[in-house]
Length: 120
Image 1: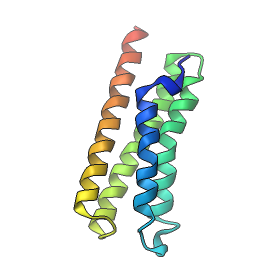
Image 2 (image 1 turned 45 degrees about the vertical axis):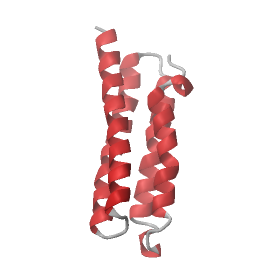
Image 3 (image 1 turned 90 degrees about the vertical axis):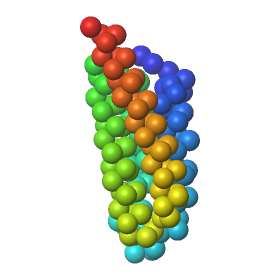
Image 4 (image 1 turned 180 degrees about the vertical axis):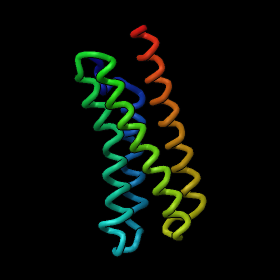
């Protein structure tokens, strides 16, 4: 088992959450049950899956939850792109968020590789 609070991927993904909540606060009300809901659910899913997976009895099971976190990252990546194209977020904000998300994705992938190699 891993102490999720000590994992850099958990810390980075928790730090990312408020940024998505803040950016979606400027979206039109018509997106409350659309992009806003999708983005906020997906962003909180990243650290939540890391935390839940860290309690599993094996790295193999933890990897499943990390895959779920990674899937949420790719959902957010897509939703941010659509939000930018719809004019809900500025290009500069999109770039900042996309870069930070890319860093989280790389961290998750590297941690997954570490756990896979460790269990060989």
